Amino acid sequence: MNIETMTVPLIAYLATIFVMGLVQWYLIYARDRAQIPPVPVGPPGTPSVKPGSVDVPPDKPPVIIPPVTPVVPAGSDFDRCVALVLKYEGGNDDDPQDPGGRTSRGILQREWDTWRNSHPGLPPDVWEAPQEQVIAIYKDQYWNALWCDSLPPGVDLAVFDFGVNSGVSRSAKFLQVLVGADEDGEVGPDTIAATAKVDPVSLVGQFCDRRLAFLQGLPTWGRFGKGWTSRVVDVRKEALALASQAPQPKPPVIAPADGVPPWLAAMRTVTGTHEGHDNPVILGFAAFIAKKYPEMSAYCARYTHDSIAWCGLTVAYCMASAGIRPQFGATDTDKFLWADSWRQFGVAVSEPKPGDIICVKWPSGGHHVTLYESTNGANYMCRGGNQSDAVDVMAVPKSSVSAIRRPAQ
Image (cartoon, rainbow, N blue to C red; front, side, top):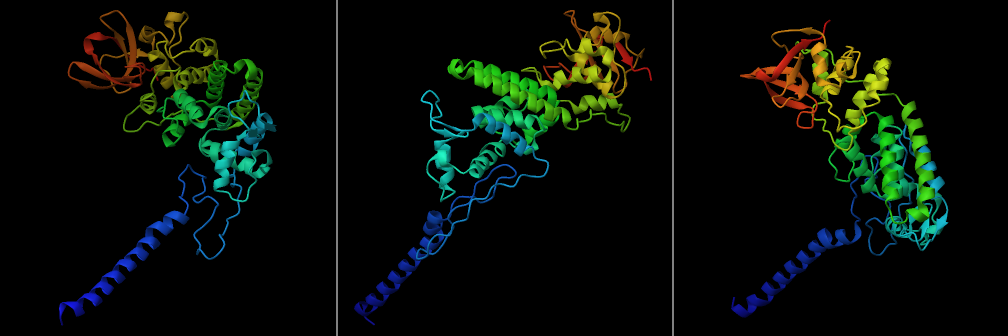
């Protein structure tokens, strides 16, 4: 066979291969990318596929999945919370001084336009948005985005309403600062875990205080301040009612295991707590002691900022959580916030065991109190509060120890 007779079949064969390759590429990549909408990833409760057009042959009309209002989990506060939000966001508005622009029931026109992209068949004007779709937006874009179903009752409302009023990321950051979580503007498992350790009643109050302070600093406060104040007052009242009615978490009283006394186990539980921004976990130590021992409530009420030395407070909290009355003498210097007052507590011992109280007098003259964990050469390894601004373990030179005390049981 000569070269001329071979050329035509070869060219036809290569052309066929090329065309088949193009068809395969289209079916796998171009067609899929053009017609299959992306699957959003969100917090628990977010639909895995949003309503919209699905992949269909080009010669047939598109199949539309009708919009569906998200299902509210059993026990969710969403219905109660969104009703309060709508009280303040209800109605249509197009105030030229409002940077949000055209709005209906708190939903901006641009939010509505984005929602309509994945929910075909809805009216273009946000003022004509069906009520169930407005509520669905609040559920999907605010409640779910802030993981409110995983937040304590009352806290969920405060965080949700501020997210609607001032932005999801800002509300998340306010919460993270107050509970000592990383301030990244996205609520997730770490923020939820940190929030669960905080007294919800105290957290609601602090959250609303910070929210109002933020709003007062905005340039539009003069025009909208009266309404904002009324809104925060209402949210605080409702959120506190939700928080106070909810079952309160029990203190971390841990049964002794392997010779570990419960007050040391409690100290280990709160290890990692950092001071800063009046951490409600630390302020909660005083609140817990006051509730456990009412005669100490006036004294505990004076602890209002974590900038006040809190080593004695942390030891007192751990003792109280184990059912042991903290140091509480006749004068202020004989009470538990004074580190040196713990030299009067319990009984004196010469050799420490895990959980014993180590009273420290630094060469500079300051005092500290902490709990003994172990010995490392010339140092006692001790776990306590206000150690590098946190509940942590540090080395205490034996030469700096002024007393070793043990609860008298």
